[in-house]
Each structure stands twice: as C-alpha cells, then as structure tokens.
Length: 437
Image (cartoon, rainbow, N blue to C red):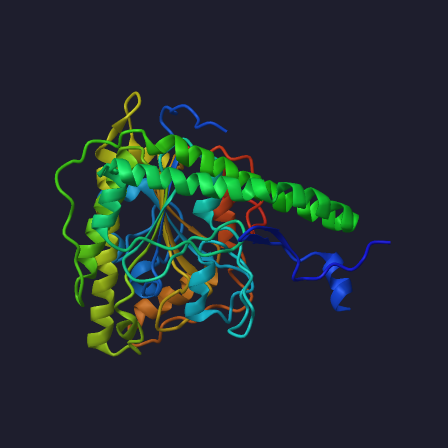
C-alpha cells in the first residue's frame, strides 16, 4: 500500500525546487528544433476592451448580410465585407464576475461570483501559439495600453504584458549586445539545467503514488518537457539577426486623455510584428481610462463622451484592418485574409455590468464575412425598441436566451488556423453560421 504523500513535497536540487500539482495521494495525508518558415501563415490578434460598447449604437437590430450599419459600425464602413459582428454570445457561469471577468475574457473559465476562487485556464492566444511554437522569434506578444493582461498559460498563470510601444519596438528590431546575448543564453541554459536536475527525482516519485496520480504526473512532466523545448527554441533565436528597423523607436505616451494616441502606436507595433513575421499571436488589453464615463447612467453628456471613446477604439481597429488588407501576401492575397482580428469584452457595456450578450467583432482570417450573426433574437429586439424610444433604459439581458458560448467562436477560430481541436474551454461546438471562405 502506498504511503500518504504530503502536499509540501517538492522535486528538489540544491537551491532549486518545482512545486507539484495537487494529487489524490496527497489527500490521504490531509484526510525540438525551430520549424522552417511557413508560406502564408495563419495569425491571431485578440483585442479586449474592459467596458464593452453601448448596445444602442453598436449592435445591429437585424441579422444577416443586409443589416443596417449602426452609428458605431459606420466607422468601419470601408471594411464592412471584411468583418462579422456577432451578438448573443456569453461565457457560461460568469454572471457574478463583473469587472473581474476580464480574467476569463479569452479563457472562458467559470467565474460565477466575486467570492469564487478562480482557477483559470489557457487563453485563446496561448492555445493558438502552442501549435506554432518555434516558427517565429516570439511565440506570442502580450500587450496592454492600460494595466494587466488578458493572456494565461496552460496552467492558468497570467502572462505579464508590455505597456510601452518603445519596448515593443525594441523587442522587434533592436539587436542585443554580445553581453546581453551571453546573459540570455545563460538564463536559458540555467532553466534547462534546472529541469534536468529534477528528472531522476520525478521518476522515483512515480513509484510512490496511485495509478491515477501517475497519469497526472505524466501530464505534468510533459508540460515540463514542453518548457524544455521552448527553452531550446528560444536559444536558437538568440543569435539570429532581427529585421531592419523601419525608422526610430516611437516616443511613449502617458497621461490622461492619451488613450487613442497610445493605442494607435500599439496598433502600429502590432502591424510591424505581423508584417515582419516576428510573431503570429498577439493580445492587447485596451482603453481603461474611461471607467467613470462607462457608468454614465444615461446622463447625456457622459453618455456622449463614453460613446466617443468607443468610436476612437473602433476607428483604430478599422485602421489596423485597412493596413493589413493593403499588405500583399501570396498570389493576389493580402495579410488580412490569413489574420483573424478579434475585438470583444468581458462586459456587454460598463453601465449595466452585464456579462451576457458580449460585444464581438471578428475580421479577416479566411471567413465569409459581411454579416451580423445573432444568437439571442429577443436581445436585438429589445435594442430595437430602445432605439425607437431613446429615453428607454439600456436593454437588460433576456433571461433564458443567448446561451451560445463565446468559446464556440474561439473553437471556430482555432480550427480555421488548422488546429485539430474539437473543444476549447466551455465550447459546445463551432459557431453556427460562421463559414470558411
């Protein structure tokens, strides 16, 4: 019979330790080389805004391809056929999350209330990136113009974000000094050595646990081996020259009232990262300075100011799409054809704090666009009624409707990238009506 295993058990070497995952045996104690370049690769850009959009000026009141552009979507008129607007999607079991639901915007992990001890899961961008590891200098870029990050590892650990355009520029174009290269290689070597040191202890531990725990340990150490492969790939990129810089680094922008300018600089960096094939997976958290405006309570001046901030975000989004569409790639195609550019939120809008009926725009990436897909007809009917009567309150989510998971869209995106997945987080299948081009 196996002896109980204490939760404080570690794999140790001198000065190094790796914490183990929680195993059922513990409950008894307490009761490769970088891949070659790929022609016309698939890419993903995920843009998150923490306060959503005012539904009355964002969500169309009819579905299909003949929908009328709303005041917000008029700013994307030039690329209308290149995006799909989707309404009625939500993450199941996140109703109590509110602003904290930012953490699951791209993961779909359950987050029912503020007191819930969140166990997050992998985010869409990182799931995408794992399938193309080593093909670019950076598996992914995690950016923000505000604070915090929307990206999470396979173990649900938040990935720190870069918040200055000049730092992104340096990562993309500025060469390391010989001393910096040596130090980077040293760190990579140290990390690989640490994982080697615990290998023998891991094998011995496998003889002390149950069969179920051995299966969990196999998964755990496969993830450790995956880290080793990442370290090897990172080492192979250290001495490769970076692309030639297109000019000088941008000046960073700080202070209130500068959201749009900073976002535009970040979008410029995103474009440069993609066009140089420095990465193919990017997330960016945008626009957080207008929290007070998002709680406008329908007060006309605050509502108008909040809508203007939303317009600025959509204008920057449209500018990025236009640049990607102008960049030629392959035989007669352009970069937008193979670049999925998503914008969404953890809230329908900041005024309601509702985590149902989330705003979603998806452009490019090889889908048949130019349509409004809705998965909650009563919701858009309530918006239509509010538009007819401007004094009406912002429509509340309709109980029992709009049950399609946002992760169905995420699964469709992964499959469009050629990833053979049949599920992502809370998905119940792919998104009906979103067809490949």
